[in-house]
Structure formats: C-alpha cells, structure tokens
View 1: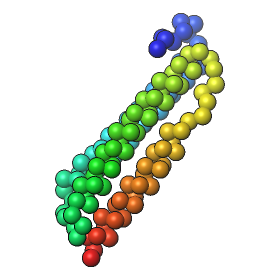
View 2: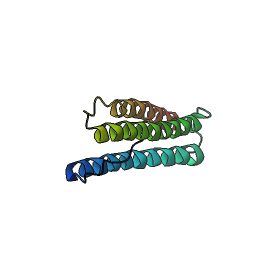
View 3: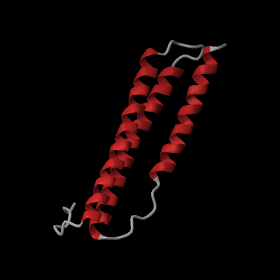
View 4: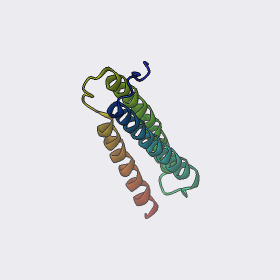
Length: 117
C-alpha cells in the first residue's frame, strides 16, 4: 500500500479521511453483529427446536466477521484508488451485508416463532 502523496492536497486528505470513517462504520457494524451473535447464542432460552438459538448466534457471528472482512477489503481498494487518482468503482459490500441481514432476520423469526409454540 502506498502512502498518500506528499503534495498536501486538502481534497485528497478529506477523501482519505472519509474512506477511513467508512471503514470504521463497517467495523462498528461488525462488532454489533458479533456481540448480538454471542448474546443470542449464549443467553437465548431454548425453544422447541434444539440449537436454533445457537445457530442464529453463529449466523450473526459469521455475518459480523464477513462484514469486517468486506469493509477492510473495500477500504484497501478505495485507498489505493484514491491515492492513484482513479475512479472508486462499484461497491458490492452493502449488497452482501443486506443479504446477510435478511438471513439473520429469517433466523430471528424462526427463533421467535419456535419459542411461541
């Protein structure tokens, strides 16, 4: 990874800092998903379907881990493009996160419905 060019261009500096803030948002989202996964897996009372809470927790933990990896990859790719002065290109991370969240919501619904029977 190359360092920022030394011409002290304020626009490049703002863009680099915005890229870092975006990565930190991905990291916060990752931490929240992993924490929720641990809480679900550890503290959810067992329902009628054995292991459903653990499965939902594992899904959240995997989603959080994937979110961090995707966020880092996006940060690295964007950082390189910013410093080279090229277009940032297409971002797939938000679509991946949205798809993973749909899976997590379906798992949460399954846990909730299993507990009501």
